[in-house]
Amino acid sequence: MDIEDALKFTDNLALTTTGKHLDSLQKAILRGAWNNQKYKEIAQEHHRSEKYVKEVGFKLWKLLSVALGEEQVCKANFRAKLENLRVGNISLFGNGCIHIGNISADSSQSSKKLQSEPQDKDKFNEPTSNTKPKVRQDLSDAPEPNLFYNRTSELSTLENWILGRTRLITIYGLSGIGKTALTLQLIPQIQHEFDRIIWRSLRDAPPLASLQTDLIKFCRGGAPVPAPYPEEMATTGRLPLLEYLRSHRCLLILDDIQTIFSSQQLAGNYQPGYENYGPFFKQIAESSHNSCLILLSWEKPREIAAVEGENRPCKSLQLNGLGPEAQEIFREKGLAEPEKWSQLIDLYRGNPLWLNIIATLIQDLFGGSVSEFLSYDTLFLGDLESLLQQQCDRLTASEQQVIYWLASAIEPADISKKPDNLQLSPPELLKVMQSLGRRSLVETVKQNGRSHFTIEPAIREYITNKK
Ligand SMILES: Nc1ncnc2c1ncn2[C@@H]1O[C@H](COP(=O)(O)OP(=O)(O)OP(=O)(O)O)[C@@H](O)[C@H]1O
Ligand SMILES: [Mg+2]
Image (cartoon, rainbow, N blue to C red; front, top):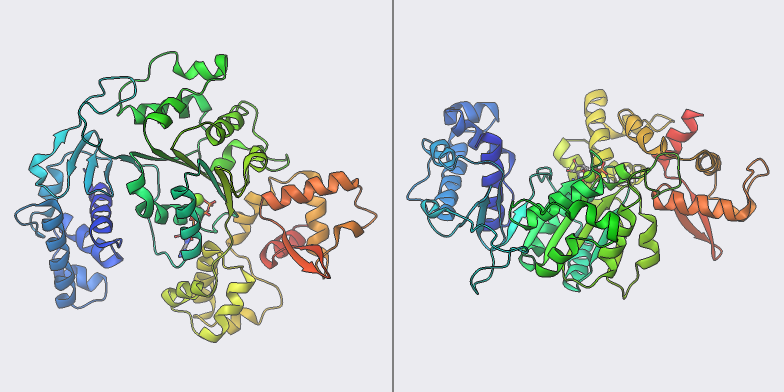
């Protein structure tokens, strides 16, 4: 185990026992203890008094001692105690069960009692006794949780969907809007519902067969997957993973699924070689089982629209920006003039990543003065530009024409009154509008009972500058 594993481990432990993640000072103390730093040095680096850092440290060691059932964890022995575990890939389950590689233990008991998890005896890893099987969790592919504000309503919607046995949930929205952060926040709220929890990012676009093998392997506790499995779906259309989704209540989270969609095609079209993901998602949504798959994406997959619905076990959540609570981001960054913050939030539509980037820029260039930043006529994009480029480069030629029209219009546009130079038939235009909506790139406003469409300020700035 290295310091990063140790931090992850302790953070999970803190979350399960106190309901809160470690803050930056607590992490600094753990790093310091790992590197044999003195409290005085940690305090100096973090501009805190030595007394305060010692107090925080004392509480942290107490928490670790109690949670691990160890006689006494302290700064001097923290590293040795964790290194004794000698494994990476650690996670902590909601029921107090720590899982370290293929070793698991109840955190309410001594870490000396760590024991090997029984090897899977049968195909579906059924428990060998009538005791409740241990929750198994692999979040090694998920990023570290960070500061998180609000989202109470989204969290409660998602929790209700999961308690209501929704089988497929898609959370989609612009890059940086907070899909990953929201889902990380959701896990502690619902993990007791599941026997298996796994998070995988599709950032390297794995073919479905290898993803499925990976998921089945996890469900089987690391035991090898029987040879014919990956090909089975291709030849029979049968989904091998389904048997595991039936025999255990699994929560599967697939992040960054836009990587399997094609660029320069309407939203949610699979890249060549990845088309089998469509029937895979559909089967998970439509077959009977008690597991749940959560997809996180910039684009809404096309087949979801056909199977989702209020009373159906397939739902999607379009994630919008933060509201006034985003002011916390500015407070944390030390911006001045709080009375101007809501204007900034509105301009960047509460996108937490954008707000963080802009707040840093305001600090760097204007010493935190928001009014100085706002005094410029044009909306400054800075580092946002490359983020917006990644999303806009995915658009088809027709989408680019339409988005440029909408971005240049002063008022929200009525698409029944398209300009003559836009050579798209009405059905084509509707398709394009739907696709832009599935990418969260257009906003709808009602005017005199009719839908009008517009582009949010930062995207508008990017699109009109680019032409
Ligand atoms: N509710 C929130 N409160 C505070 N910060 C947040 C919140 N949600 C997200 N953030 C921060 O905003 C940034 C972007 O969030 P996140 O990575 O979850 O976005 P995303 O929608 O998953 O983006 P992408 O599609 O590019 O992966 C992160 O630094 C995250 O910590
Ligand atoms: Mg993400």
